[in-house]
Length: 597
Image (cartoon, rainbow, N blue to C red; front, side, top):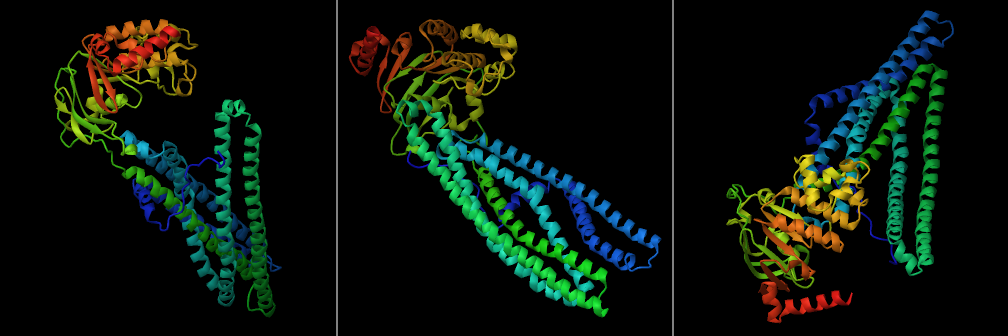
């Protein structure tokens, strides 16, 4: 832990705007809203450029000395009308572009999540879920900014820049030529310093993210930190990270200070020179005072518009980078997908499961075979226990049975149908899984229980909870089934979480049960009661049981012993115990340890 923990990759600018095609295709679904937003944009840009013309009329006709008060009022009413149109148009533009931004982001998130839910677990072995979560938040936030702000600002500034330049040439061609020379002098330092400030700001954000990751890591491991007396070292690491943030911030402040002074010098220097020339023109009678006022105001609008366009382009590139990363998730094809014409599983279900010469390697560990030439026939209604040392391949059998992965060799069949020929969702409907760790969701007790069968009634939920020995503690929850269980079921003990997971599987009422050390987190009394419930449940059902505690599988119809991905023994408890092989050695060691305890 000498370095800060690696942080989630942040979206980087793209080289082109090509990836934004995804956003345009989403916007095309709402042509009416896009049209209304564009009309409002035209109105606001036109009204903004009309304001300098209004000032010109007021100055030339209202401050000439001797002007008619009624005429003066007319010009001011004209200016107020422009302001009202600008206000209404701005409100409409803001509403429609913001609506489009939020709607497009919502649509993109829905599409990405829909595709993510179809991807096989192997995808999440090779791609960090935290990084994917970052794309769903940080990247979509950038897209919302592009649609809801950046595009609108870009179009408005483009219209104002072009329209304002035309108006300037109409007002005073010679002064406009001088202004066009001055504008690049203003924009170029803005671009130069702006790019450097953005780079330093990005580095600063990365360092802040490093600090956040460090704090999260240390606080999450506080018991280890204090147990090994590492408080002082962690404080020094944190101090170094904070000082790195401050050093980067000083560079950013220095650059922004220089940029601000240069921009002020160029902008106000240019305005002063133009006003100087204009004042000479007014003195000679070649230009009116209103023309100079309108010219200065419009010139400021034009310079600001072209300057903003350079910033907008950078935002568009960052949005394109975010769109590209989201597009990768949208275009990712599921490694496990239903065939074009899936074969129907026989009805009613029989519950047979067959592994024939299966060899499988996990995508992240291709150098090691989790299963090697593995063959196993599980008959309907049979209870098969799978035992063996850690890493023998026990859980892999469940992963393949649910078709979370496809083997590199061999075939797997359910009720005589190859898994690759059937719809994965149909395969999984015939199975109920109880994982080794009772994985729960941040929801109430009812939703966690009926996750196995979402349409279950409360009566069915309580029946399943009763069978899993979970009814008593669920009844005692503050709001019963409506009680929020916390993140990952944090408000329940480990044993309670496991019993909820068992009730969830019971509620599914599937012909094939997959029990991955289902009683591992229970105390002796609860284990006995749950085992009785499981014994009743396993009647007339096919059951595969992964067990580390061999005492729980003595009654199995057959015990399969795995070692290094291969079957080394199989038979009943008595047969294997008398054979003196791996099972007998594991059993003697375990039972001896239990007696000693």
